[in-house]
Image 1 (cartoon, rainbow, N blue to C red):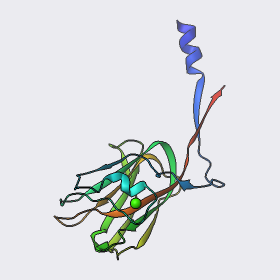
Image 2 (cartoon, rainbow, N blue to C red):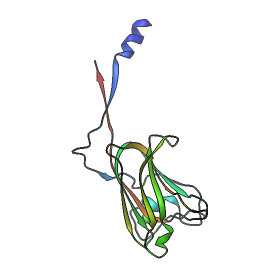
Image 3 (cartoon, helix red, strand yellow):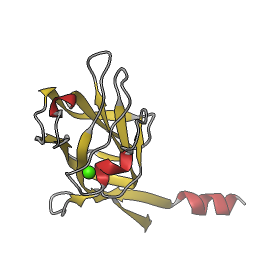
Image 4 (spheres, rainbow, N blue to C red):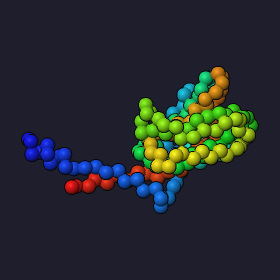
Length: 166
Ligand SMILES: [Ca+2]
């Protein structure tokens, strides 16, 4: 039993983060999306379906949010957010982007201040080597808002985990 424990201890797990030559892709595409609240026929999946002609829509509430589950740890380089293109782009306003390995440990990536215009593309760059599984976008001002992006793209790369025996 003791030798088994020692054997187990000499297995060391490394996380190799290789970002300098990484090829970033939109890792949010078709991933599960959770909204702080639902409103009618505009589900969270509309934010990751590759279409700028539709959008998602929360109910009216204080500080609405949208969270994407990437399904695994990723280096997150950039978040691209598109305001809805039919009207009302100014509904997208004053938001924070956070990234975390779990939903109880989210870290600040970047923010947008002010109101978007209809159809506007907003790029938010995370600090170097930001790693996480969950990406959240949340309006951080006002008491009664709706969150209605047409699309959220997360440019990242899957973190390669390599087990090394010493
Ligand atoms: Ca869409």
